[in-house]
Length: 287
View 1 (spheres, rainbow, N blue to C red):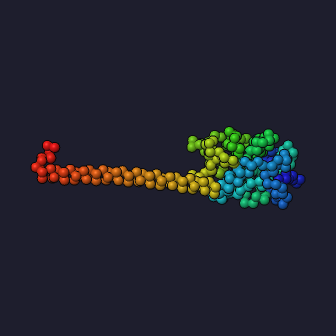
View 2 (cartoon, rainbow, N blue to C red; view 1 turned 90 degrees about the vertical axis):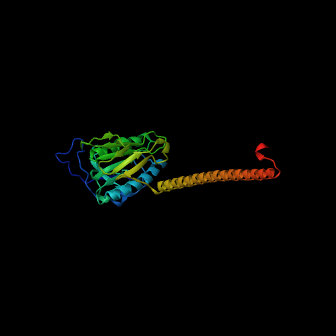
View 3 (cartoon, rainbow, N blue to C red; view 1 turned 90 degrees about the horizontal axis):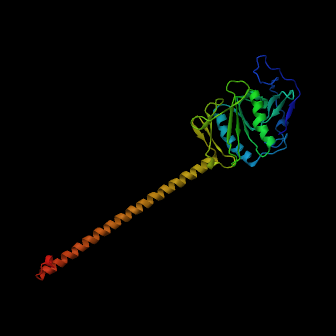
């Protein structure tokens, strides 16, 4: 996406602005049409496109977070322009979070302080892009008061998965927070939202986490299809096991019946033989 620069002056910060907040405040100017020109998730500054893992993560995670946004009455921002004040440049610019949530009803007028949560999918193929995702965007969001900032590491061979940052005391600086006792990262900016890292053996391209909202796991169509197929396979295995058990029980009953019939026939033969011996004047018990 193209980076936009706003020439119009911005309002100065309030006198009681928090330490660490930039000297300027981004104005909610309408984003012109060219703000969405260019290739989605393409970094013009570094001349770098997204990786395949990055794309899969955005598609998978974005679809689930969209459900959260709808349920929480928030708006989704994904590679949409948002105005940030850059103190080192002395101007405000439109930057493009990979994914963010806002209560602003119109993302066309969006400024960074209106974001409640921002998320970056880390591009690790380039050290410069990784630093931009993990350091530059972290610091810019912290300085603008974005309560939570989340990093997702999408590559399956990367031992990292999630880094969750939160400005607990509203100081303009983030602290890295650990998952809660149930192993999930719990959002305070979006109550009910939790992200859980999957066991490493289950990591696939762009899929290293589960998303929960209000205690319910959210699933995309691919996950639903996979779980449905697994459930069907499990049910088929259970049916097959029951059928095998029934067949074994039937065989045991048949064997017992055959044994009973054989004993009965042997007893009948013995009785007939005894009858003939007695007819010949022979005591069968002495034979």
